[in-house]
Image 1 (cartoon, rainbow, N blue to C red):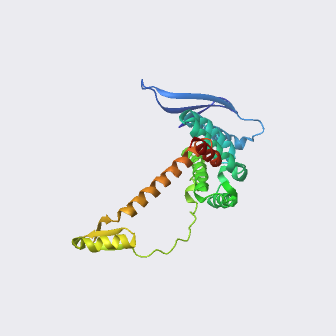
Image 2: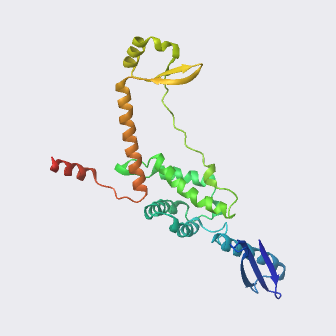
Image 3: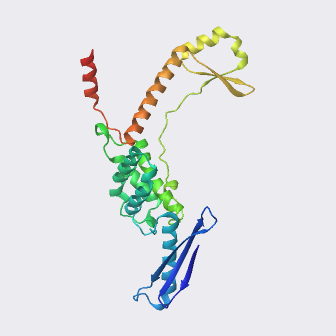
Length: 265
């Protein structure tokens, strides 16, 4: 809360409290402001209240931006405030993502960043070429949006904007292949071990075993299990590689890797 004391017609002392020290004393900060002569008398009160709000935000949160601050300016200040808490690679990842979205939304005031503005940003990013000349993956575009959301969430936390528009962005829906019904059997069928074994090897699909109407076990052939394990390892490796790239790791040319492997053989 800010306390305002009038010292003269155009001079005011603004005192802000931000919690308490360990000894129980209030954390106070005071600043004296002078209302410019260009501000008419009827506008003095409004000017002082706006300055009090700005000073309070700066003291409490380290920010003094308003909803008219452009996204790029706010994001750069946000990065500076977060740098002590980020790993170097994490900071570099955020910086890289923001540099990509700045040309699209950097010059827009925070108050005018609407959900549809961010949806248009995502649509534009999806059209851009990625690796191998193909369009950027939707998952990559989602990471850019998450970075933007982190900045806007900070603006919301500091009462600069009323809500985070990134949270209201409609997610893109993709048509999925029509899938057939999974194989389901009641637990009593486990007595027919030969029949279940033959079915598992023939269909090469998981068989869901139910107990009292609820899923209880999953039975599959050893070949199918090995395939699932292999796919899981590949997906995990791809995910870890993407995270390392986002955190600033340097990409290695695949041809060079294979050439090096051939030399070792």
